[in-house]
Image: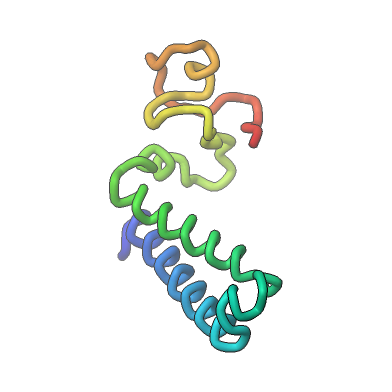
Length: 111
């Protein structure tokens, strides 16, 4: 069976392909940004979604999201925070230290 990382990456790759195809269809139907005088079709959102998703795949490949895969159990209350570095918990980030391992603080991440 496929491991968690491969399953997630496979799913995200399908999302990128779908977004690429959707962008291409919209561009064919509507023309370029210059031809239509701006983006009223949602192309900016589709491109942002595609780019963000591709970035997530790269972060999985680079090991940046390794810790996230340790917390895939349903019902677990851990949540990643944009305020922490990989390997740092939200509690240690707010205290200014990096000596704790991630385990999930009680508060919700903002942003």
